Amino acid sequence: MLPESPVNEKSPHTCENVLYDVDVAAVHLEHAAGEVLRTLWPLVDPDSGVMVVGAVCRDVLHAALGMSEQLTATGDLDLAFGVKGWEQYRALTSRLESVAGSGSNIRYRVAGTLVDLVPFGDVEEPVGEVRLPHETSMMSVFGFQEVFAAASRVTLAGGAAVRLPTPAGYAALKLKAWVDRRAHHESKDGRDLGTVMSWYEQSPQVIDRLYEPDDNDAAAAGVLEAADFDPALGAVELLARDAMSVIGANRHAELRRLWQSVDDDLLATDLAPRRALPRGPRTGRLDERVLALRRGIDGPTLR
Image (cartoon, rainbow, N blue to C red; front, side, top):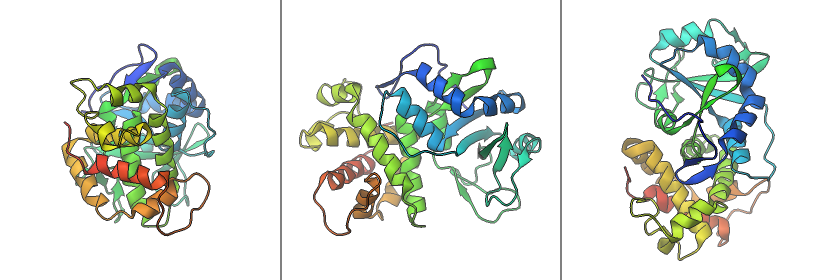
């Protein structure tokens, strides 16, 4: 059984002390996925759950955090479906219209929308990976269980509900996705990481944590000093620390190992929105942000 998480009983909602408006999140989720979720909801086992991931998750959090910067438009809808076994996944998807020739065996048409429905939970073997029936390749669902456990439960009109990852949870998924997909020359996850960094850099709650960390806030302790008292860089390191706290010790150790082979210069290029930077040594903000991110990932597990 997947763990419960908070219901949107009040607004705004605090996750890792990053304040966002859950009512705004509900409005944007209603617009992006309301009909899809209402169609799926009667088919979902009450002990399981649906979590929004991908670009819609990014856009909803961006709006709920009060950000006005325009993001890259997308028509994709990615939902992660927590299951206790393949029979449960097949029982759900057998009632949906599979989209043949899409290049993805997890794509369905739901309420007129193309949806990638990603299974996770008890079907993971090993943890963080799933092999779809009749497939030979593995699909990464790294951190999905942990991010789900920390996610907010947002209820929409008609009672349909979806889990919304915290900003740090979303960042953790993106840190792994960038490593995986950059090997295939895909850079979009880097731009998404840059967006999440801006959420933390502009958060008053993050700044408060950096300058006056609570005694119980292990993630914020010593971060500002490590960033040479630069709050923007401190915010990036704190984002990484919060993300590692969300995914816990085992997943953190996995990501730390993967990060040993990361090309810092390449990530700095990918963080830049909509422009290519020349390869080679650079000393600007982007390189410093990558180093701050690395400090958070290379640091100790905080829970």
